[in-house]
Every structure is written in structure tokens, then in C-alpha cells.
Figure 1 (cartoon, rainbow, N blue to C red):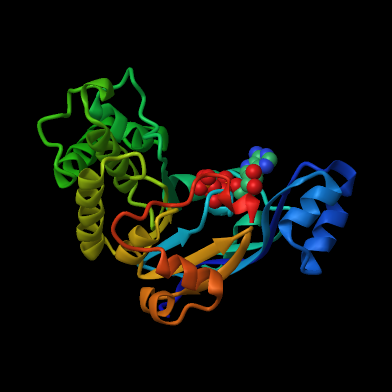
Figure 2: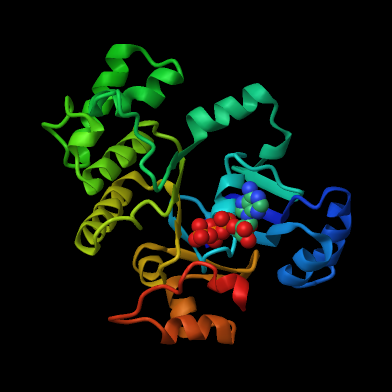
Length: 286
Ligand SMILES: Nc1ncnc2c1ncn2[C@@H]1O[C@H](COP(=O)(O)OP(=O)(O)OP(=O)(O)O)[C@@H](O)[C@H]1O
């Protein structure tokens, strides 16, 4: 595997539970299932000891059913969520030790994020939306506008710079979100289900566009999806989560040809035309 850009070591996240949190953590460390810990300790388990290394310059897909911990995990990588225990290294640096200035530097220059809900500001036009992050981190107006214009062209939105988000389709809005994240030119881009609200054809188009951009950019992209086909199609490295733990990690070929458990094998069997991902909440019911 290529050099790791991101290392997550024994990361646990327990939401709530108050004074019983340490006991919840101890149970998880001893191997107790998420559902048992939640029932006995009155808490919610987001992550139950995630250990993974994501390669630099590649697209890594974090895949799993609804509630398996994908969003919780990816939000740890820029510290939108703080872990209950564990270590997170980016480029070898322990990001949990960063002070406020270090954290600002991380979010402005090293890790950017694209959200599913586009996250665009309705009162700003497309160009201003793309330039927003650059301006916020202190780039000059001319430089920010120039970079924003360049990225709009690269995602195929030339001619829309002065349009407002509500004048665009969902696919176009998500392209604006993509341009905004890529314009930051950070080494790492986190993408939380960026295409899942889009029609299949537009989604395919954006997946291809992302792959095309990635061929020249070589960024470290962490892409969350609940769709195994999307993960196998896009990812060079795949991490399958189940109930807050890593069920299997490897290349698409590893996952496809050498499933590590019946759970992963079942995912593979369930693939194909007509298959749609299990309904939200299915993870909790197992
Ligand atoms: N703020 C929170 N408070 C309490 N529990 C939470 C919180 N955020 C997440 N959880 C719990 O952590 C678990 C993982 O949630 P998470 O949103 O990370 O899953 P996910 O795999 O991203 O799901 P989805 O595909 O539905 O977005 C779930 O059981 C969820 O209920």
C-alpha cells in the first residue's frame, strides 16, 4: 500500500451515557457488541475501536450500512467530532494535540470537506461560493476569484459564475461544492455521500468527473458511501464498517474476490441491477 496519509488508531466514540461512558468504553474494548453496550449503558456508540490507514494520493471509500459509523468516522478526520479514545494521525502528526491555531491551519490548508447537502450559501453567486473558503482563509480577492473561475471551468460550470445556487440543478450545485473543496488545494478532501441525492445518470457523470480530476490531482480523497457499487467503482482502497468497527479493508479486488466475512460476502451477492441499498436503520436491527 502507498504511504499512509491518514492513520486512525483504536478510535472509539461514545455519545451520551454520562458517568457510564468509561464502562461503555471498557465493554467495547473487551469486544462487546454495540447494541449490547447501548442497551446496558444508555449511550449511543458511534465508533467501537476503528483502526485503519488510508493511502496518500488515492481515493479511499468508507462504506457501510446506515448507522455503521461512516459520517462519525470521517468527521473525526478534521475534528468536527472529538473521539472518546484513540489516536488520529495526518501526515504523521497527531491532530488531537493541535491547539486552536493548529486546528485552523488543518481545516484551511490540509483537509477540506464536501457535504451531501451541498453546503452552498444561497445569497452568494456561484463564483463567490467557490471563492468563499479561499477568502475566509485570507487569500486576496483577485487570487481567490481567479482560482474560483479556474475551478468552475474544470468542473464544467463555465458560464454559471454569476448564477445563484437556486438557479442550478442538484448535480450542478454539487459540482459547485466540489469546485469549492478542490479550490482550497488541500492535500486531503473529505466527501460525505456527496452524490447520493443525485439521479443515477448525473451521479455516474460526477463519479467519472471525480476520477478524471483525481488522475491529475492525486489528492487523498476520503469518500463516504453506503453503495457498494459506488465504492468498488471509485475507490482504490475500501474500508467496510459494521456497527462502528472495521469489517474489512483492502483493494476493490480484495473485497470482491476475498471477502473476509459472511457479512462482506453477502454485500457482494446483493450487488447488481435492481439492487438498492438496505433501508436506513437496517444496521441497528441486526
Ligand atoms: N450526535 C449523535 N448523538 C448520538 N448518537 C449519534 C450521534 N451521531 C451519530 N450517532 C450514532 O452513531 C452511530 C453512527 O452514526 P453515523 O451517522 O456515523 O452512521 P452512518 O454510517 O454515517 O449512517 P448514514 O449512512 O445513515 O448517514 C449511529 O448509531 C448513530 O445513531
